[in-house]
Image 1 (cartoon, rainbow, N blue to C red):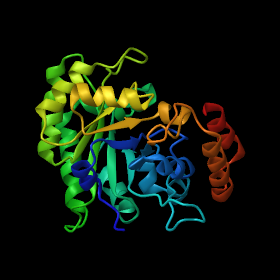
Image 2 (cartoon, rainbow, N blue to C red; image 1 turned 90 degrees about the horizontal axis):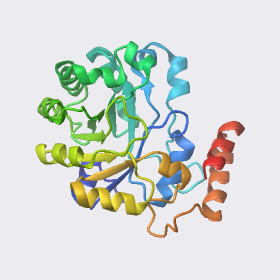
Image 3 (tube, one colour; image 1 turned 90 degrees about the vertical axis):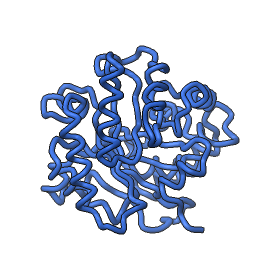
Length: 284
């Protein structure tokens, strides 16, 4: 069966289920696990684009996927590679390196950590929609003209002034971004509930798919957010770490013994380090 592109998934699925970028955790082994339980698209951890383009060692460490089935059941596609970049050249060059091994790239415009902000990465980009628009345009121009099925997306946080968020999203939509994932908290917020109203307003203001991120711990959370906002998909992080079966139709609300056994098989097959394997088990 031919693999659906990300754009086709947004057209055909009632809700596109996406494994969010997670530092350390959304690497190949975990992506292979959640793909067996209803996850349509999976993202790599955030990769800093300038180091990725300049260092072969960085590329080897930061980006791993599979070419076949590796003795297990699922292939690592559709795959989105998330980059942190602060200029068009780095984002475009990094995209060129992964173009033949993935189905899309995502520009991180939402990381609130101080180290990222100090380097004009992550949520710092929310202050400069013109730069982000230029990054998207130049990257689109650098990949092959036959790349209609390759998606360029962005992941953002909201502004306390929702009008600014709407303007930002409209500008990057006009620049050619294919879809936007929205973590509906401000840069300063951490554990506060997400802003459902802001998410809905942004979704209603755009003509491209919008994906909800934040406070999605269960299938019911995903259903409620989609019903209240009309988003095209949900992007989940900690909820999937706690229950990799969350997107499955047979999900019982907790991680099953079968899922844990599959995780151990995948960990063994892929050679994941013992420490990371144990961290995942502790979450489950």
